[in-house]
Amino acid sequence: MSKLDQVLVLEPPADLKFKGPFTDVVTTNLKLKNPSDRRVCFKVKTTAPRRYCVRPNSGVIEAGAAVNISVMLQPFDYDPNEKSKHKFMVQTIFAPSNVSDMDSLWKDAKPDDLMDSKLRCVFELPSENDKMNDVEVSKAAPVMNSAKVDPPSAATAAAPATPIMATASASSLDDSEMKKLLEKCKRLQAEMSKMSEENRHLKDDSARFRKMARSDQATANSAASLPSLLVVIAAIFIGFFLGKFIL
Image 1 (cartoon, rainbow, N blue to C red):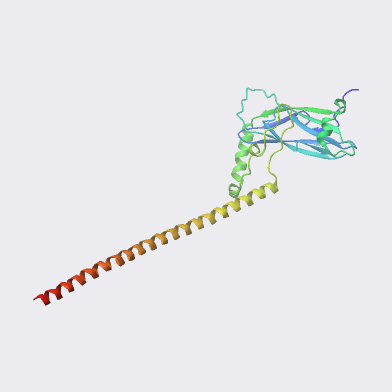
Image 2: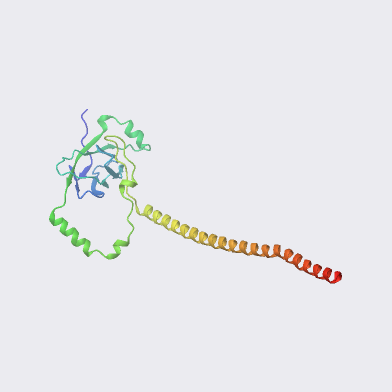
């Protein structure tokens, strides 16, 4: 039995283009369309799993539906003379009606039931016109954009994928995760303010205790010198009276 042709329609069909500069995460989109009347399971693989993150990297596409996939290239030192050898593969299989365990489905799949499409990665540097347009857009952007909090990059948000041709790992924070991160930052700032206030109170209490200790010590010294003074006065009186009677 010959191998099945790919049932999904890929956009773009052959090349994934990434436009530099590559000093930050560069994202390109891949669209998978299912023109058939059956559900289709898909899985995205790459020859360089440590260099890319994919979201989502697997799933099920309903009949007549489509899925948009974000492919994120991690920052690296780009060499124009180096030819890219990175490739992606979209592997698919028709989903049984009662599928529940996706891992078992792929593990037990027969080679003749699998379909796949290969895509080549292409790196491009921006042209001079693109650079000028980017500068004009950045100048026209509101100043308030500079106050926005930058979300963690995909490089820190995603764990490294498995070895060659392993499924690329998912990354990038969604809106709910971003809100949780901001709320956590606010809680940490409130706790730091509270700790600073408690530290200030502790310093004030310590200064007050030291002042009280010095006052108590001065009182004790005065009380200790009083008996000595009384003894001297008594000796003077006794000597006066003794001298009077003797004379």
